[in-house]
Length: 139
Image (cartoon, rainbow, N blue to C red; front, side):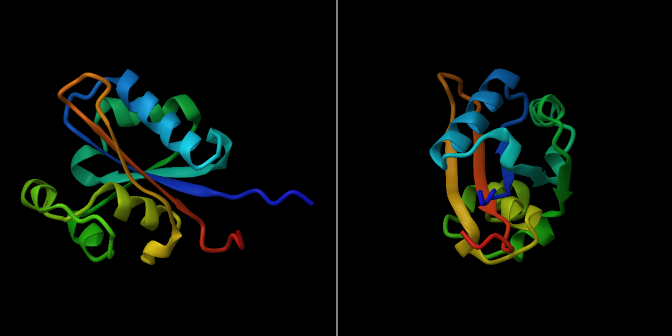
């Protein structure tokens, strides 16, 4: 019997990031954990980025839902890589890691398969991707 792992992806980005860079970042992150797009149950991000074209179009391309979380909700999630800069700008020390965990319904960082991947691909703007597995998976 094949066990299929399910994951949530957390995304953060610089405003105006290109769709190309976001798609590369997401696929690179999935490749790093050995999964394909079919393992993803949804994307999470901060409310301020819910309408960011790179995030919206990535979700639409794959048929994934987007969950947008408040800075307050994200800040209540313990993460391994908090950022003071992100806290100053967004009001929470983490977006991608915390959002990935909330997408799969947990606040426990032990469920992070990929803590934080930052991808620029030659641009000044960056995508940040984290991946968390569903707590109900026994893998």
